[in-house]
Length: 201
Length: 201
Image (cartoon, rainbow over all chains, first blue to last red; front, top):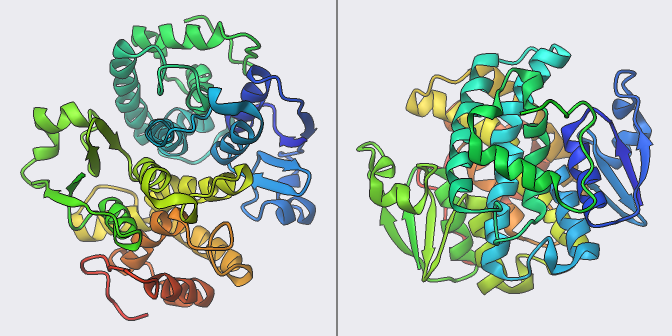
């Protein structure tokens, strides 16, 4: 299966990380983002939203990193990464929403401003970041993993932009429980880092 | 089961709508939002994020409307509303992410500014709204329903804030395919409207 990929995109890294952890074969198709390839007809046909990642697996085409994680885990990863029990699917989905909303508009937005010059409101991004990092730290003081008592796709959805949060001026080192969880993620068999994500905490 | 509820919240309405469509018994526990009840210890214990909705179903406690939809549909609604096939779970999840991200930061944010005086950037909310309404309209020109070829929890996640978008100055009437889909949602057996959502299109 093929991932239309951008190496510096945390959303693409969510999929690469899960594929590495679950040992799924993934062919990376780099997208010339700076050249606007994601807005060209051949990619807009696959994803009218003009964004990466896009997953192509036979006749299945999906956009949105969280959706791709659910698909890959449900189809290939087994209940280990995406539980079958209703209440545990609910628990995991709580964090998929956090990844799609608060992480996107917090650490990711701050990084888009600092690293790529996006005209977003940095102060809003920093305030959102501070709020969710504190909530994550408190949650992780009580739980080793985000949901279901074990590593799931919730980790793959939430970890990526936190691992490069420092590129947006967001300092995760002030949140010790969060850092301990990040270290647990990084110790999972098969873990691969985000390119450029290796700043010591 | 009990829903900690705020009648003017579109996120709470997502859950009320699904419960009505799937004929699930739901006890509504109104939260005194203006009085700050959601920040009081008894609700912060259930949801440290200090937000509604919160679902309590026996020992299961969940926050986040999308997560509650997945839980309720998986546990009580059967495959009709939350498919069991991996690629269809992926399709639906695409729209849960849109509900958690773009709808939240588009039509919902515009309404928060106009109706409740939140200090958000209205121009960003309107731009986000215009983008996703056009994408939705194009998608719905090809599909009767958002995902899986039938009504699913994707409808319950995306429809609510669109039904009250006019309260934020977002005019959905310019998007005929979107309006036709909204009419299809409103014709589903058991449908209940958002309080105040009844402006003619």
